[in-house]
Image (cartoon, rainbow, N blue to C red; front, side, top):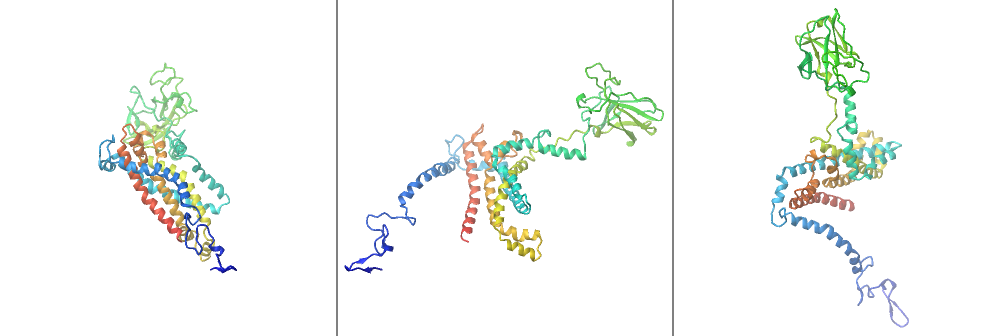
Length: 463
């Protein structure tokens, strides 16, 4: 549209007076460069993007292309190997173990972390100190994988005095089945005792009432004796029953005599003695602090037995880093670190839920479990998918925790693809062809998860 002026010329309205456009909106005039919607010249935009594109190509695209290329060559990199390196991924036992362990990681680690994060996020909404709890749960995220690996290497230490996990296991076990104070005790050939089977010891001859019985043992360090142990005392003869002495037949510093209660030798307090006839226990007694015990007259003519319970080895806990438990143990350390991450994301999604729907369900008679299962979880499904997919991508390339926590004796059992990639590429017998094939396999495993995530993001963006 134009307006006439006194001179008869047409004045271009202000709307058409734009740089790079002819009057009437017929495109850029001569000598004008085309601009984008934002008014930025394409050349300038390309100049700013070029450094990023160069870095992306040098640090991402080129390594991927070269890894694919290198995976078709042999160990030396001079001979074409074809698909031999990829065949090794499914025939080599070590690599197959790594693939199997990666599958275990992908299934359990993200699922457990997401489930715990969901539980923590829902429960902490109902307590006043929920913010403090979230802070404590999220704090492991501030720790590097290296530091977390060192921490859990100590947590899973086999020695109960150092490993927290085994200290708890030993404490619980000893509450219900206490170990003996004399786990290494045993008789010498000159002693009147012999092996009785199943870890017990029996007298070589039947005992008689009125004849004191000697039950000497060795194999207990004086420092390991009970604190309230006192010097042993030779039992006196009794016509009403069978008496005897159970003691540590060892004189500190030497000079003692076998089968003789020497003054400095200590009694085996609390050791149990059984009288056995025809394979049946007819009586039992417990030795006092001085090692003296008394059995009723019915024990006359019986064999005396020191049952195996007297020599039960102390419980040393669970072999957390052994071949069978090393992978679950390392997954536990991962969950400890990443459950807080899942909790924070889910709590953010939970804060955005329309509360009127939850209250309406409660008014209609739904209990808390029904509200959680039928309303909260379905409405949080997009957030749960984000957390789950993110953790799945993360565990596919897990390396630090496995490398640090798993000891050398069980590292093969805890092996994963990222660790095997490192070992194959930089180990003592490095094979860059196999290492490159493992890298390509990892890439192929990650791509479907990434495509799923991208598709989900686009779907959410169209809503």
